[in-house]
Length: 386
Ligand SMILES: C[S@@+](CC[C@H](N)C(=O)[O-])C[C@H]1O[C@@H](n2cnc3c(N)ncnc32)[C@H](O)[C@@H]1O
Image 1 (cartoon, rainbow, N blue to C red):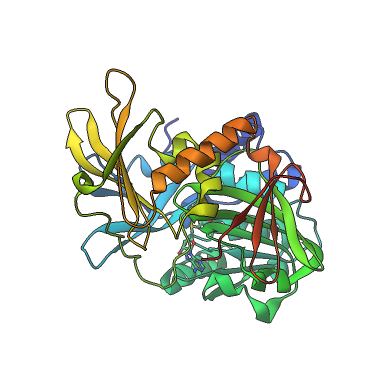
Image 2 (image 1 turned 120 degrees about the vertical axis):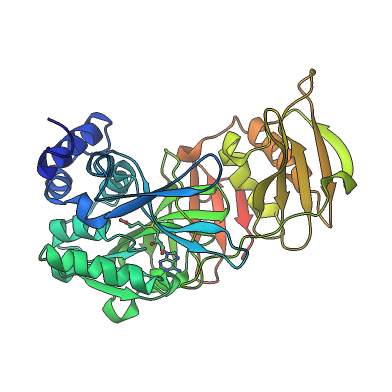
């Protein structure tokens, strides 16, 4: 039987089996939700970026669409054009395995009221509503058209959770208190407004990322005076929260990499090759770090470039020389790469602790303390408020 002739329930069943085999789908309640939710109704089309940067669209008219929608993959579902004319992703359907991993980690009970930040396609709202019922599920997205589309898809399935087009950093005060908050976009910091809308003992699961790739999912418990908890052991990355129902600006970086002070490094110059130290160094960065590439060689991009809004920048050659060294150029008020090297060394000396040893405490004054092993332990980093 081909994918186009396979009934969707069978495809959803296979998807559930795959997630169970990966160890992420564990409870019968979430298996029921996955098997009962037609993902194809939430992803009527998706976009794939080609090598040349152009996007192609696959929709219900295309043969490969149905099978693709039931694969355990994230799918880009909405694009927008920036003022510079670039097409950028503004919404996607999260990889089902990640969604389910988060729902399992949230420890949702039948009587819970759950707020999701980042409605997107509405697929995750459908899972939650199947599990908890219409009256216990709330979801917001900054994209008004996204919310409208999600609402009509859910209604078609007979599901009527409460949705609104609003900035997720504000939570959804009209419907508080919640027992759980799950964010499916990343934030540089956890808004205290969420804590205020949370029952004591409630949980927030959010991707904390002060800069691109710099952070991970944190599961935080609401205490009277703080939110506190640990990062999940496995890394995940969501698209960043945006401040308006518009495409985000593409941040421009340094003019000419050859003008900066010169040094060298033996480290890989991409954030994802050192995720934990790249997160920890955010405590020293003068603002959000934009990451991109400059120039081209026969083997790909020439420079990896980091920059912050105060004009600090670092560029590191992507390819090492025959001795394993990479040229570094740095300019502006703060040598960003030097800060990263120093933090990496501290992390090495601590025995390279992974996410499972790191935790986060957020207080009403907006302070974010990242700690090693225990909240009151000897090692901590203070993320600068942005
Ligand atoms: C990865 S998608 C969400 C996927 C979604 N949960 C699903 O099941 O399809 C991230 C979403 O976050 C939304 N978002 C971005 N900034 C936001 C903000 N300030 N407030 C609320 N939602 C926001 C985006 O519009 C996008 O739809």
